Image (cartoon, rainbow, N blue to C red; front, side, top):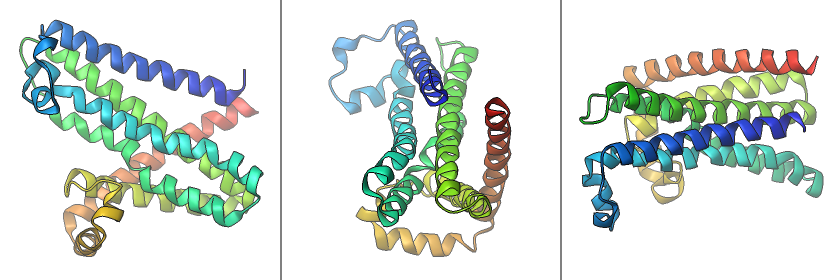
Amino acid sequence: MTQQAKIFSILCLSTAFCFILVGLRIHYSQVDLSTIHSIEDIAKSRGMTFMFLIWNLFLAWIPYWVAIAIPGFYKLTQSKIFALGLIGLWLLFFPNAPYIITDLLHLHQRYPVPFWFDLMLLVSFAWTGLMLGLISLHEVRVFVKELYNEKLSWLFTFGSVLLCGFGIYLGRCLRFNSWDIITKPMVLAQDILVSMTDSMAIKLTLVFTAFLMIGYLTLNILMEKQRD
C-alpha cells in the first residue's frame, strides 16, 4: 500500500469516527427521527445540534480531493495553465478544512449529553478537518516543487497559509462561503478591502497563519522522515 493510500485510509477512518460520534449523540439524546422532515426540524432539535459539522467536514474534503487530483490532470493534459487553475480552485476551498477548528466556539453544556462527549465530538471534527487541510497543502506544495523549484514551493506554502488564515476570518466573522466569490463578488471584494485595515482581522489572520504554518512544518518533517 502506498503512502497516499495509507493517509487516505486514516482520513476515512477519522471521518467515520466523527460520523459515529454524531450518531451516538443522536441516540443518547433520544431524538425521534420520525419528527425530522426538514432542515428547519434539524435546527430546532437539541439532539441534532451538531449536524452542521457533517456539512463542514464535507467541505473540508474538497481541497483534499482537488489536491490529489492535480498531478494526475497535469500528467494527462501537460498544461500548466490548467494545473494552476486547479491550484486556484484548491486555494478557494482550502480554508474550509482548518475552519472547523473555530467550531469549538459552539462548545458548552447541552443536557442530557455529557460535556466531555461534545468536547470529543468537536475535537474529532476539528482534527479531521485540520489533517485534511494540511495534507492537501503538502500535496500541492510537492506538486509546485516538482513543477518549479523548492524555494517557490515554500513561498507558495506561506502565501497559501496566510490567505487561509484570512479566509477563516471571512468565514467565521463575516460569514462568507467559498462560493460567494461567484454569488456575491462585489460584496465580498468590498468587505475584503475593509477587513485589510481591521485590527481584529489582522490579528486573527496572523494567529491562524502561525498556527497552521507550525502544524504544516511538523507534518512536513514527519513526512520527510518517513520518506528517508
